[in-house]
Length: 299
Image (cartoon, rainbow, N blue to C red):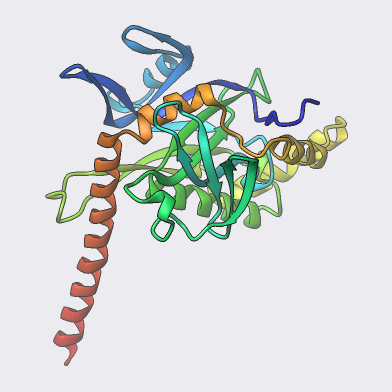
């Protein structure tokens, strides 16, 4: 295998909760209150919708696609959800630095260099919103292609925290049978005082509607036993996936990087991100104020 080429899950399409629009001669990201499933082909109007979008939307209330049935192809949570602090060159889309909060790999004059990663708030290279957490969730939507995935990309803390927690919890609760669980992506909203109670949307991962955890685990065990009887080796699949991710220093290529910069790292995206982070802080302040009022009432 060619060294330096990251082997990531095959991508059949994209899952998004926003789009790029033309405004005053500029291409700007616009948030949405529903999912859109697209192919990997763009036209002048934007990404062409995947046939699955219409199929799922036709069954959704008011044609608003806010839940998507999915299956994870790996048992290990971190194989399905890839996230790290990422700094891109905004002109070329090239990934310059990627870190996990402890260590980072940075493109230097002599190639890839290893450095401490103090997180974007404390890193001098990351000032001005140049570095932020960049996350990719790989999920299977098409049962006819068991290794094909649709990718959901985000730099939002709410989605990253929630998806990481859910994957870890379901992985632990099912006894390492994450890939056998019937799951769905769910779009949730929350609002804060600073947003004048306007909803902020983020992505959650839950069991499919009408299925409780005990039923899901029981079904997962049956699927796992049937797969093993047929000769399917999930542990080997996870092992090969780890090797594929580790075949390169950076998982993101330059061509993909230009799309990422436009959608998540433009000046307008930075304004959105700062706004959401400020709203998170207001949430904390609201909670503290409520607790103080409760204590005063008790006294």
